[in-house]
Image (cartoon, rainbow, N blue to C red; front, side):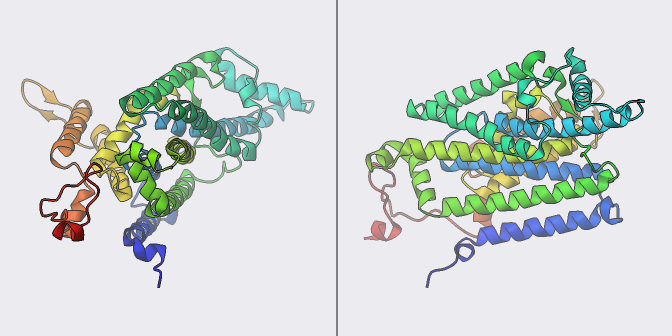
Length: 410
């Protein structure tokens, strides 16, 4: 009798159960329920952390399973935030402009309202007209569609050009980093249509829900982030558990052999690159309404490097490891840089944790790489008593065939 997917992958059920219990606990302790043991800002921090865990899942799929070290996935994350941020800023500004023009003796025309919105949004960069890319900003359904289409199209075109040219390894990493840097530099310009260095702000004010307290909005977004993470984990776990996952890992381990076996290596890579870009965009669309602001600095290449560090610390090639790494590093970063730890006076100098956090993170990454290559997720193997199979001295690898333990004993 064929076992169900969850029966064959108990770690998925364990993860979803832990996520559900965590969501329930945060909900009960939040200000929205009246207990107020968790502040609204803390609920937002936890919600944003879940979004970062979701993009870490995408990074683990493309790097841990497919072996493609992308240093540009935060570009897709930020583009998702920009797309939904355009509607949030437009609709919220429209409410303000309509309320102000209502005081006029004559009713305002649609064109006057639109002109007032444009002036309010782009006055900070010396403009008063909507750029073409804001053509659909008035429509939530269309902007939600663009949240997927814009990052997806960029990933599809970039991936097709890179993979058809068979760019691999460090060269592909450099190309993805260059793509991110070029996009960031473009968005820093005032004439980019996205307010340059000012970015989009006030995204925490949800149009039509001005009377709803931020405590309630924060828990709603927390639920949405938890749901997206749970569904994303379920999808990726199902994807890597079957034949597709086996081919993906084979591409990571020996791309040439997989190509000689007749598989479309470039097709697999392009699908994975585009899929993970879409997941990153969804995470960004949920993240920035909780953060309240987005600007081109979010696309800085260092952000994608941090993403790789999270996955490495958590344990790449393990979906739960990516989640653990992202959550651990993000919460520790918030703790160290949020002034929660007092500075330590040393007499000749003062140890400021805000300044030393990146040093600690770098040391942690080096230590994990040298002494725990499986990351924090590898601790579960140790707790379960799992060990590498005793191969009785038999070779293991693509050049000598992949011996099974039974074969090694014969």
